[in-house]
Image (cartoon, rainbow, N blue to C red; front, side):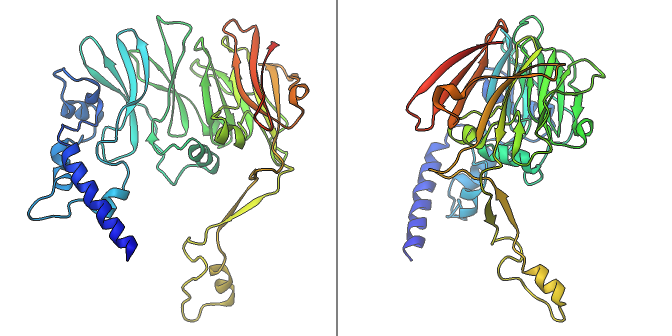
Length: 393
């Protein structure tokens, strides 16, 4: 009873707030980037190939009327994205007068698209990346885990990068639809590589070198690199993790992603010739089982008449998944940091254990702009001491 009363009061307050807070015009399209231009959201939507929403489309739900007093329902509150919250993100300058960003053209969807805004003319151009956007629920297990740790709910184009060493002509890398796309200004994005080139494995954490000549990514627990040239093929650089249970190369460990906000597990030198990567050992961590009791069937399956004993057993099996989850006070993953020349099999393992022992956190890693050295931040287990160290590359 009390819960129902609380929900009713909350919805009443929310309805009152929304009716006043949304008196401005909501423009959750690329047009939101400009406040005093002649560009309209409808024309931008036509370019993007989708129908954009405006305040008038929300009016029936956001403002109470005589015919429909309870204009906001619990379903509206629980649906994402909420009205007015689909805003541009991930701003980067292509040039001094051109700004790239991501936004969902349809404010009722979570699917983002890449746009470029000309700051001189206010003209907004959608960058049409090929491939089919992966829908929520259809990502691979590895990618879904990364999305959850990054708290990422958007689909479509969720990230992109530009080369930084040549401001005159920037090269763009756009992950989309299970592949990597190279984009150069005034040209359509072209497919560089997809999962078919790495035996169907999911391509994760793609990066572009500063000079725009080299792309690196993780597939099936190993790091690959390749030139951005047309017709090039990926080359596996790291080795030794694929056939070892609990070991990965180039993938950030769980603690780094969750606690230290470090999603990356490898770092390409600015000139694209050297690779630093993290090797993680989790085989010593016991697997923790997560049971999905709310899945279809679950603990109370519906049995039909004349169900065989085999089908009855199968219908009572509850789906589950297992993870090497790190609990507070228990053992952590073992982490190593290696440097490897692209094209070489030799790995130079850097001495991190001498700082705080093997039970430590690799917090941050970064190359110097001149490729001469790599800097790492190492944190002790109690998270009270931080060491900044530099290694000659």
